[in-house]
Image (cartoon, rainbow, N blue to C red; front, side):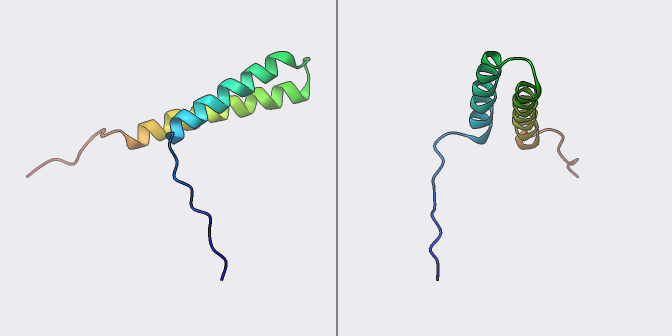
Length: 67
């Protein structure tokens, strides 16, 4: 039986996604205009959107009415 590697995350998912987006944008700034740069920017936008979505899903938001 294979043992699974368990990793305890010390940084939240949102923070990791934002950090990835920042590094992708920095890397894209160094690239010449083209498909590779656009792909990096697209991936950065997806990471930012995912971070915001995750925060929104974890927020208390609307609650069911109490009776």
